Length: 315
Image (cartoon, rainbow, N blue to C red; front, side, top):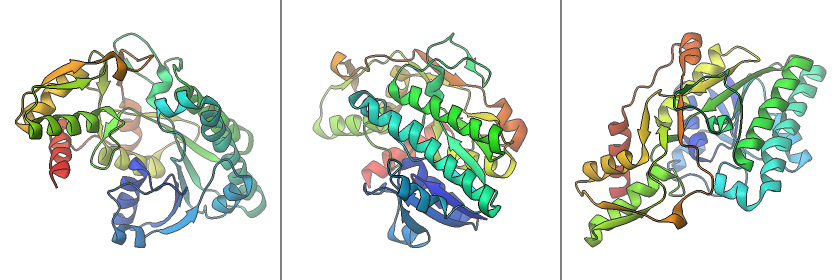
């Protein structure tokens, strides 16, 4: 199968490329000018054909869409709440208009040339916003709390409209938080890992943190990549699927767990300056629909993921 991956040099995209290549697929990686995630080796990059992509440029999107044959995984976009708050208009241009532009190009090629790829549009569980402290399901209302989440929700709407109108085989994934080696320290788990290691090396008794009360589902990025592959094979067009472990962890407990694995029980020191302006208190997902459709289940435990990250930092 020939698979086009947008955002291919980002964190999740890099792990997905590895999984696709290992499964024997022909892969085209579409990416902007930003540097690639650290996990991609020269050998990894050599096994993928690369094309440039700027979702704000119609000609760039048109050239990229020409590479679509059997499947597309659309990961490209603004992936940070902080970035979306700093420039909300760009988040909407990239995540919503960029997604709509790509899907219209794919629809046009389907009409003109008869191509019929499966298109996996990767959204985010943040579209659910605040809610009762229970497992979120795909039927829950969408109530985003940031330009990032709102623009991703609108991208879902745009993509599914194309499916209804022209029959393009669109599947939507809503991944819950995931982590692993190569993720930026702008995200909570790698930030904890880096700060705890730095405190241990310097002999410091405390580490500054943001709000430690939120509860989060947490997956290994390799399990998320496996879910995306499963949805390319078995996802039903027009459907939305949570990608989740179904287990919630309070961020304070997660901090303590990382400290214990690092062998340095450092004290967290919450700093209001590091807290998000608006945070979702409880975000844990139900992936029963995904399991029923594909047989997918997480393979890696939380401790395995955290230990891998600690070992990678040490290297």
